[in-house]
Image (cartoon, rainbow, N blue to C red; front, side, top):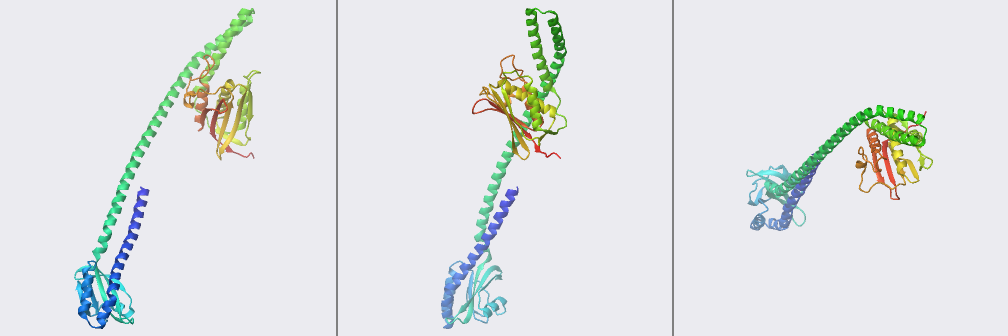
Length: 415
């Protein structure tokens, strides 16, 4: 609407300028007619040849542009006339000004009951002395008619453009609103699905937790009683499977936890270092190298520290499991209040057909059966989203995978 109003105002100003230009052109037409016959009229008046004066006026009147033409002496008395004109201008102030100044004048007047535009043109002899003046009349409506068609075309064109613009905007708004509604509906269903999965996970974890603890304890006691090799092998296998299930239960609990608590400013470098320490305790001597390029301690994020650390732990664990020789962590600032954590590995990379949205779905994994729960990246995405961040995965051109975590941040100087 502001755009339409502005364009309408611009058209109005342009039309007003065009109207002034048109009026000026019509005035020039009358002036050209007057100048064309002024010298012959002057000679005819000097020779007192009224018939020749009348002939010149009749010729002007027949042009069709002039509604009336007349010649007066310096006293304002009519000498000759053609068409509609005023008989006596002896009392006219405008005629008096023409006689006194010898300059051309014009004005809108009423002649014979009609509104006309009158132009008073002084008539001089060849020596430049004023010997009379002529009055050329043109109907005022001629000025309006000459402009009305242009005005109609302009406003009709503006109306068509305005209608088209409103239609386009209306359709665009409807489509955008529809798309937003679909996106909101999709996100709502996604949240409902995640809530249902979280509730299910919490129930499963609760039901499995106690039996697994009992199995682990009894397997340990049996190992202490039966020291023969076969018993130790079988019981170690049982304890290994129980430990794997216990980790799964812990991940289910991590996934089903309530939203983050009140965020507090936390040093991003300290969080990454804590997550790295936690993961390195799980690694063997032949594990890939973990290289950290930490930011300054002043770079802080508003976060639930324990939950964000859990996300980083899962992210680093996944990278170390996929890497061949090295995992690298870099932190970059992308603006005054945004930073990105980049975790890259030199492993085989992601399947070409997989997207970030697919890989962060709960229970989706690219690892062999029995080696992954499909919850690690889902936990990462869930926690990052709760911190108003963004999590993406992509393959690196040189090979391997690159995970990016974009978070709000700030640089705070310690007092």
